[in-house]
Figure 1 (cartoon, chains in turn red, green, orange, yellow):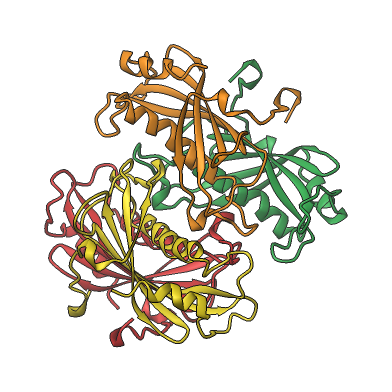
Figure 2: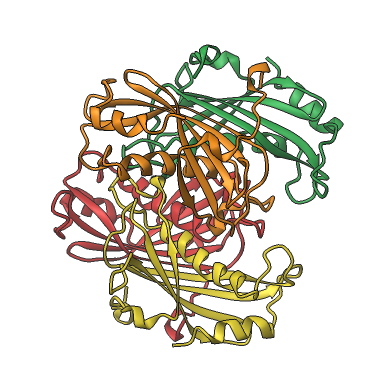
Length: 147
Length: 147
Length: 147
Length: 147
């Protein structure tokens, strides 16, 4: 967008955790590739899927939940249903109550990201929605995502 | 709905082909399970995915494409992100230019369908949208789906 | 599907309540019209939108909520983004704890449905998910939808 | 994200063109507000809707189509189905073959954006996908969007 956003594709080594992702028939839009908004459904799934898998987030019961305050994506190459996607996950910054995740979407097996997303979660109390310090088990899970 | 629709869950033996399906974070709606409309995104993916895999449909180039004229789904038990789903596929009836598919969605590994869908494709010429006889390679692929 | 499902388009007079619906860019799939699954997102919106508008459903607080147990749609003519859609609503049957809604989707201003859906809600206690008698205010709202 | 991204809500005066947008039942996710990815479906709709309305884009036939190379969104306040949204549109920069759009999403009638998105289109030849100079009619349409 401006100078600072001259974003380039990243290699697999820039990510710590990988999850295989499926595309769906309706993900392709009229231009015959996965629609730009669909990438964010996948990004959300990669981040929350990791937290659930690590026991750091219980969707139904955790007192602390993540609200999304900023997202961003650069698209380098099209992805197309029915191909599978490798979703790579890393953390860029861990704050007191917020985390900047980086998610790379790769055509299955490809060496470089077809798209590169940032995803910023602020962790809040489920009821009051007030920002809260990241709980220790979540912190342990996301510290493993530092490159 | 009416008498004829007293539909019951089916076992895995009612289906011929299975595909593992992922759920996404945003599939869960405010009632905390996969939204009823999302099932149809999965059903579409199971049917078209099979046709593509069998070489019976080339999304970009096939002269004959499938238009959806009727869909139906009975929901027996909730499905919830982040669980995986087994999508079972069978054909109920093969006509001259139409096919009635049956798609069962199972919680991963479960013996009975959590949801049971019908999906009716009419095969048409890609340009004129006129119904056309099912091409031989597609016929060969779908005949394998008869129970 | 079978003989009973030889469903034909309905005129606007078959519906009691109308809501204007928008399409979105990503609703169009690779075949350049609104994807079959998207119709169900609209149907859900028409039914729940009516209940909310009538004060019969408070999404956050109502003790009784509607679970979807069956949906069905016949597609007669394509709908295409960016066109608007008129969503017509009627009830076909009101049971003790369930309602069969009929939803017609019309190209804006058109005399006949481009698609015709059934949508069956079972009303349950929000916490226990046990079927419950339809509360009086909801009953009053849906009785107005009888043709 | 980094210092430069300390983005603040914008007033309605920061936008030139407005479009009313609907939410759908399934837009709300498990946390009871519109899911972060859904905002991008709306943003896409605002940008392309404007181009279509202005006669600058014919989805089926235009020789030049817009590919999305970057998107970004800051979320300031939740939006919730069934509320309506006012989508404001402006252009931030017009290049030779690319345009940076700014899209503000407002709770209906609200003075400040609930979310603020950037959306970068590169205009390419429909067949070759090679970047191409923005055609004169499109240029005329987007120049009206400069604040």
